Length: 270
Image 1 (cartoon, rainbow, N blue to C red):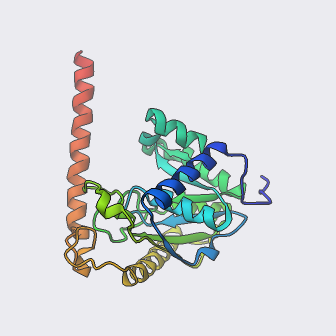
Image 2: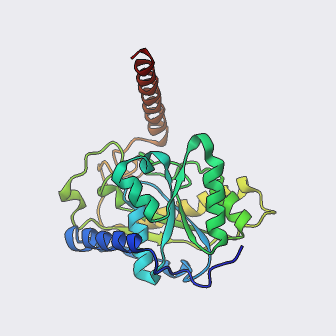
Image 3: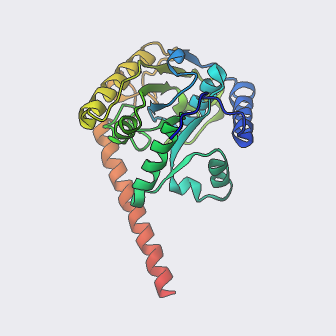
């Protein structure tokens, strides 16, 4: 495979349109002013895996926004198949060349991701595999480490703090919280990944780096989180602990599975 000489892409009109809409929403409507540290660690060309914390549903768009402002690069995100199945959102995701992840057939997405990295793309991944309701870094999946090693690409840890104020799990979004919300984004030192590395150890190292960056972002955040729903419990907030969040998530998944089984049964009987 050949590698793109430049990480910039000017032939993605839908992506450019989406970035423009994002700039309008975040900059002109919500008037967000992100404070970004380490943005120079996102390369102007060549491949890389952006391993991003996941506390809010807009985190991917915030990373796209600041990356584009920095060096006009486009980030290809791995997103769940359910999002691609939605009529308008799915068309947008496909047009922006994001990668659909089907949990029942994950190898296809993995191969597409490695192929994109070998072409010199920036890949956006949420290694926690879901939004963290406790606002702490959960255990990570090893997929980011494995695909980076196979493609010979660095892993770049990225922390987004404050994005949960826009929209997140188990909380109804409120304009007064989102308007002028402080957004803190910290980009860490890249981790080299090679085929000889143990993906489990590499993933553990990545999580340690992400937690350190998160500590930095929370320590420099201008709003007091004391007693707030968006602040983790160990820092004085009212968010559930990691253990409580894990129990609630397991119960939620059980309810979803039961609903799917009920739908399937009604379809067969009908």
